[in-house]
Structures are given as structure tokens and as C-alpha cells.
Length: 248
Ligand code: PGA
Image (cartoon, rainbow, N blue to C red; front, side, top):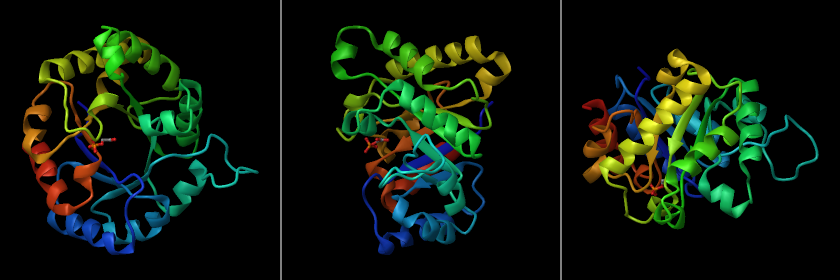
């Protein structure tokens, strides 16, 4: 069974004053059985590690596929590791849209994360048009094959199912819809990487997770935690989600 993970993605939000939120989370959940991860903007990584005081894991939101070189403005997996990160999100739908990232680029980024001893949180998910066209599972299958590298193991990979239409909208799929996709992802991982690895890779749900829906979402089988955007920005919003996962 994968461990449980409550992951927060701060996106392009957060300044020094917000490190207090990480501090507060660390204090509240010092002995949590759940892995708590916050992915602040890169500008805060090192300071966030200090504020986390080893009670909370700190991750990044993206990495470049290469280790170093002439790539102005980019940050490599090796640099993130050096800054104290343990995880990196790759292939978030906002990066796929804003920066035209393809499955192949996402795969290269995940492989770079693995090469530098970071856990890659690989994001996939369908658009509303694709769901309405009844091709959700085809899209999930294609993205999993294209974005998850051969180097994936249960120790270095987490897959996050994030339907694009649920991100930041307040809309969430029904628990049946989440269950269907998570079961499909679990089976696809088992088929590709073998039962032991496929069963042990953590699967997160993401998209408008809040204190009010977290308990229902965490009760779905093959949901090992959540990737949370808006509701991860403050300890008072995120903490109840962590508690719901602890009780799941
Ligand atoms: P949201 O974002 O929780 O604000 O919907 C989720 C995500 O993008 O990971």
C-alpha cells in the first residue's frame, strides 16, 4: 500500500511572510502519519525547508530536463535538490497550457527528477471537452504512457489525476468518476511496471479539493492523497485536509 500524501501546490503565490503558514503546519502536524508536502515558488524553497523543520516535505513546481546550460530562467532538478527539495511536480496542466509542454517533455522532466534523486509528481488529466466526448480513459492512458518514464518506481514517482475542468473552478468529479479513473490508473501501472510497483505507486487526486469534500474523496479506493492548490495556501485551510487524510 502506498503511503498517504497531502501535497500543496502554491503555484505563483507566496512571499517571505507566508513561510509562517509552513511553520504553523509543521507545528500542528509534527507527528503526522501522513506525508505533508508543500511546493512553494522556487524563490522560497530554501527558506521553506528551514520553516518546515523536517516535519514537512518541501518540493518544487517544475524542473528543466537538462542538468545545466544556457536556459535562461530555468531551474534544473539538480539545483532543486541542492536547494533542499525532495519532490518536484511535472506536467501540471497549467505548464502544459502556458508553456506548451507535451507528454514527451514531461517524461524528460520526470526522468531528470529521478536522475537527481527527486520524487516526480507527474500530473495528468482530461479537459471538459474530452470528458464530454467520453474519451477520458483514452486520454489518461495516452498521458500515462507518454509522461511516465521507464525509470519510475514506487519510491520516485507519484501520479496525480487532475481533471483540468476541476482545477480552481470549485467543480469536482463525482466520487464514482474519481474511482473509475484511479482504478484505471492503478491497472495501467500494474500492467506496465508489474504488480508490486503498480500497487505501490501513490495516486493523488487534484482539483478543487477542500476541507468540505476531502473526506469523501479520500474514501475512494486507490486515492492515496491529494494535490491541493488554492486550499493549500494557508495552514487554516490545509490543516483540515491533512486531518481528513489522517483519518481516512
Ligand atoms: P486547486 O488546484 O486545488 O486550486 O483546484 C489544484 C492543482 O492545480 O493542483
